[in-house]
Image (cartoon, rainbow, N blue to C red):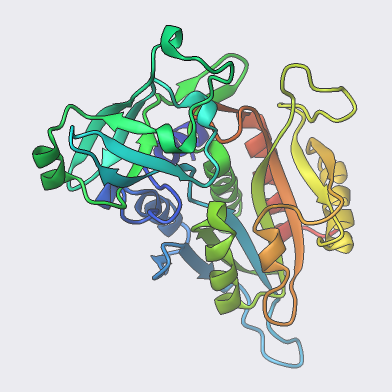
Length: 349
């Protein structure tokens, strides 16, 4: 697979949390992910919650051998964005954030409002010489979009509750880096697809289920539902983690290009961590350690609580500028994550 093109397809498909399958209609994030996953799992589908899910049963051995264990792979498909609250008398759209978007980047941004048809617009901003406060960050109740509408025209195309994405071009940077919106967590989706591509036509020791889950940015809602339906024996959640930003201390900063990040946390399974660490070392896969002192803030938190409890590991891809339209990742870190998943499924340590 062409990793860059796969990632571009995913990142340029709209899917604000709660609108993964509706924004952009047939061009939505869930639809794009479904098409990509179907190449490896023909039974893939989108569930009623907007989560893309599929499975492959490699080993159906009956007792006394028993069936192969079911491994769940998860990455979330939703992105942070905005939602339309109301239309004022001048035709401006009042909007608010969905999923913790960084409001510092909003003033003067170009956007697409996903109404009955896509509508281009800009975030309104007060000129700096008219601002009295030292804090220039736009407040939640100050975010308006100007699409050039009158109120009457806006109401023909825009419906309250429509989602909004910030317009940005998927761009290749230097030294194997790319920037885009929605790399959190379309990078994780791409890593799982990369792993499936590496595993094509191989006989494996696990049965595999995949979920590209919805509404992670709203409390990991889609993953909890989909994981409950599969009830796997073990799971690997794939997400991103921030680090390697200007001014970060050396002993707390993870590096882009340093490989996949193996999570250690009280809520994660330590045995799975040690096995992954062993596999990475034996196969010369770059990795770095991420230690968390409680919940991980990812789908691993809810997956591990599914039914009677699921052993769960977490792999994260280093990312800069989280929850902005200019997130940055290194392609080799996605490859390392996919390689480790593939080796975990195919090999033994």
